[in-house]
Amino acid sequence: MQIMANGNAISIANGPKYPRVKVQVTGPYSGFYSTVAAVQAAMRRAGVPLQELSNFYADAAEGEEENLLRTCLRWVDVDLR
Image (tube, rainbow, N blue to C red; front, side, top):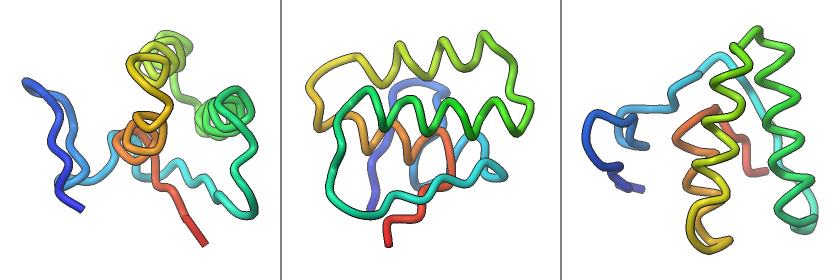
């Protein structure tokens, strides 16, 4: 997967912005808010600053819902099993 972000933003090709934050996504898709909440909870547990959690939310909420997975992959290590 070679999705590139604009400017100096992290791209999937370079790996996630917070590679030590691990989020496992299993089962059926449960919606935007539960996905964002799971990622933000993992980011909080890893000590990611509050401003970055807000930045992640703004990035995830931008555009269509199809943007959500790409956004999660740019920010954290997502296990899609």
